[in-house]
Length: 493
Image 1 (cartoon, helix red, strand yellow):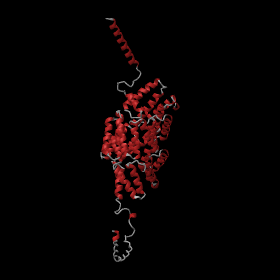
Image 2: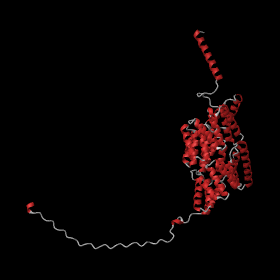
Image 3: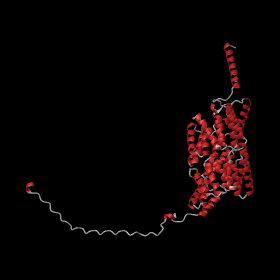
Image 4: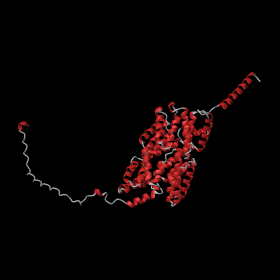
């Protein structure tokens, strides 16, 4: 072998050794890595931007970070990631045990690196945790703290949008959303924009923003969540077939999504397929024990004449809420107030919701408090809160129905008729219990009398007024003969 050949073989061997060594010691993926991301990497990217993550990916991420932190307890970033992953597990499963775990992980991150040193991931996680517990005042403080230290850090603004909306400050929520869209247009921003537009009553804008979010979604869990939200928007405007299509699309994309199962159950009940609806509700509650879904299932069973089963569901609801509040600190006062107003003690509902209104002056709380006051017999006070719920833009059939029944109890049949008609135009099958009652109430009020409102009719028959007679026209003067024009003299010719 020639000297040149030996030199080439040695160079090739050295290159192989160097490449192998680089592959062995490579600590992490880089941007040009062609390998598909692993489950933990997918979940980390999702929770890092506040997007939904798949259950399998979340489990992989939790296991990976727990293993890492067992030997690296001073890694504040990993503690923040683990806390956010725990929080996403709580959102997917409605299991209260995940909330204290998320809080402990996030607090550990802040111990390692305090808020004063710019631990923005943990601070944002604490704000998201407070929103998930419906402690919107605390969420607002965390979000505003991040914004004050880093105004261009986009992750603060989803927290602020949710917190301001929960507190009933919808103008501030809109401003935070606009800033979020400017800083980071994408899935999270478009979802929040849809939420803000929906609260303002701008249905077309809400749907368009959610469609933009669908275009920005990449992972199956993200796409399924957006499809579920599109189904919710379609349901609220009474388009049952479109809502069913979106819910089923969400379930095909992510079969484990409990919210989409609950949405499909709601539509099936409206379409008269009660047995299938009960099945879907029970499946959804098996995956995520949501008190709101339990209340819907109980009312469906009640409407189907299955009172004993409904009472069992209601009993489980109260026990579930008590357990969740004790273990996780989640605020379920709104659901409990709605349950007490219709199926328990209205006076207890008024006390519960009055305290909730002092904390969170949102439209759902105003509607629930107004309805509880009506059920307790205080219709004058009830109307004040019903107006707050219905006059700021949000258009929900349930809210219009509540206001109509309060106005009917006060004897204002014209206003009650108008809002019952609005209810049935928006979504005539909004509730298996109250939907039929709305139709019956409108039929009992009937149509207004012919000829328009009474105050537009004269008290006495109309009599033509006596008009003054015209003055006689004076006779025309005799026709005057014009004087002849003098002829010009011959001298002037």
